[in-house]
Image (cartoon, rainbow, N blue to C red; front, side, top):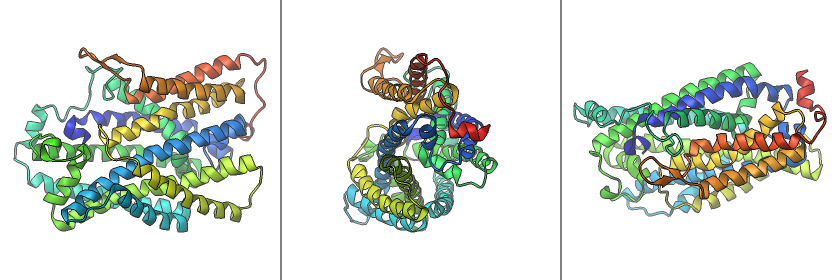
Length: 438
């Protein structure tokens, strides 16, 4: 959808994501392994205290519910289109419920090991189906489609002319914002950190993290190419003019109406696989964070491994129900769903990453300093999202481009926390992570 409506400039974000992953691999991952941590927020708990750990964990829970609830809704779109082609009319919430039940079954029974293995299998289905769709689509396009797309600017990769303040795909905005976003999503988000901590050692984790950045860039390029090919296939017609209720129905409509039945089924399976993969990881990370960061901290009860496993499974079921409720709240989006999902995550990622960096770099900062800085950052970022407007370079006004939300949050957290830390004459007591590194 992004490429259909725009160009290849979305790929600039992937450049930033790779840079951010490299920073996380060599700065944050060694901290986790040195402290023998099972949760991303345990670092905050050991460095600042249980209060900030709980605050960060609750923020993670809310953000994850909103962002992945939207992704789950997005997956219901092609399923609804497919079912409508066979005369079956189901509501989005019914489709979401079925997807959630299927995902919970293997997540509940297999835990993180099942999540990782199923993720790997689902990715091959997802990418393999996309490659097959691109091959079939290429055979249905006119011979000059590529040259036409180039002339229309659809294959433009770098954008040095758009406003770096309001355009999310201006080069500096996408690369710098993407790098900081990746540092937060892979260094401060429990969903990704738990996967990285499942590796045998820090070196394997670093390799996996950097390699994933390369894979993501290739995956982005593949789907942007498909979007450009669809633009040629539909002759640039707007989704509304073709009777589509949402921009995100472009690819599903092509899959259902124009692909051979077997391949169409493979693509739908791939889309479902990607959604179930995200949901499974989210359920696992949400239950882990709830038990490790909230229950054990605030109940002050030390649970044995068997009790942690039982509670984790129970919370997997609870969060599955909540996910269905959140995903069912969506019915449509004005922008491509991938952009909306990224912008939601950006609202709080700056505060999370900023708190991590404050703990790493500022030895004087205490828990009160970090908590005030954390909440100040949330307020500032939301104020920019809702109220602050900038000239868009075309005579109008627009909001700050979403890739800047995370860097803005990091800066606010470090500045506010740093200023508050000046009240203290000496460094804070050494944390267990710092002692382990020493």
